[in-house]
Length: 138
Image (cartoon, rainbow, N blue to C red; front, side, top):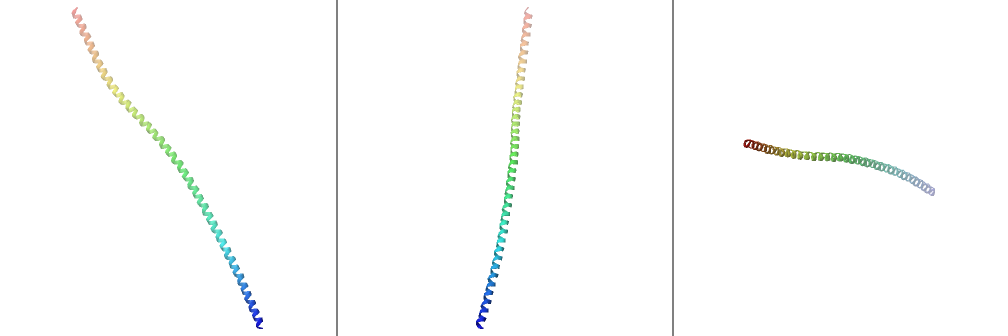
């Protein structure tokens, strides 16, 4: 009877250990499954974040390209405007120089015309005087 009791006790101990081993294996498998699920979620989250980052980078690159194009167009417009203003200023300076030159020429021509008129008047007066003397001599 003591042997029988020991055998039952041993059998119960083995059943308990076997049941414990099955429970531990089930818990280990449950834990492994949970870790795999969490890893899959993290992997998906990392991939989604990387995709979102890539999309944002692409969007920013496109925006920068557009801004560069706009800036170049504005720069070209300003360059053309500046060239136009330079041309206009150069023409204005040339016109001012022409105006000053023309005013000086007009003034010089007036002086010359006045001198010419005086010289002509002087010559005419001399001719009248000579004609008067010649008539008086006859």
